[in-house]
Length: 93
Image (cartoon, rainbow, N blue to C red; front, side, top):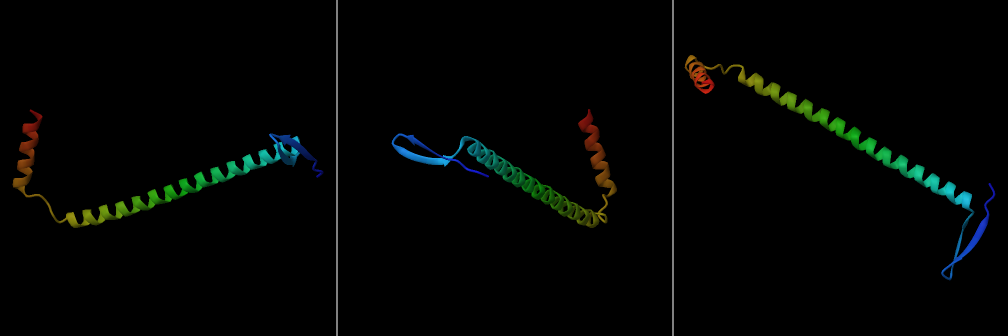
């Protein structure tokens, strides 16, 4: 690859750079690299979010199962069932 060295004078400062085509190619390469890094970081964040959600769901399910297993022995008495039925009947009127 042959690079041309072009020298431009802008506001009294000498700026050295590559030719126009090489500069556009460098900008394009930097843009693609930035896009890949950005998309990769978003993908990684979303993966972490999915796994964290799955883990929290498993923990919540396990806690709910433990709570249900502890509550199976506690059945309402007939008086409690009657009170609930009366409250529902009065609420629906």
